[in-house]
Length: 108
Image (cartoon, rainbow, N blue to C red; front, side, top):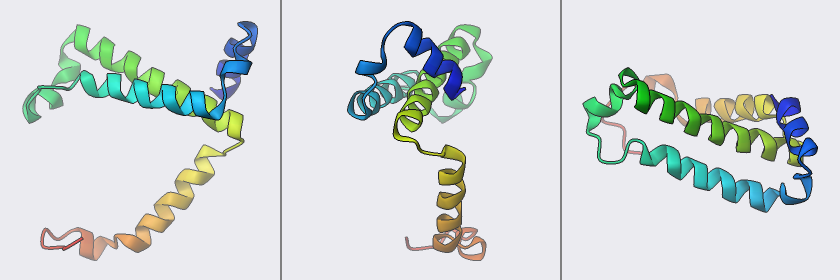
């Protein structure tokens, strides 16, 4: 996916604009656009959003935008996202042990 996006950007001469700052800002903007698809929906409506073809398409496209900017940012910075995710899950395993996290009375 990163190669696809890098090629797409290169063929358009966008590399000078794909700085870490610009990509992080674009990622934030796209995350906001994704959130906007759920704005004002109640819990049940948000759980059913993919049942409406138009809303489902909009959500998929915003999710693709978020993923695109995250992947480009990782590529530009040389971050291995799979390794970073595994590291973060390992950290969270220690922070949120299953036996504690499964209770509702946890004061965290």
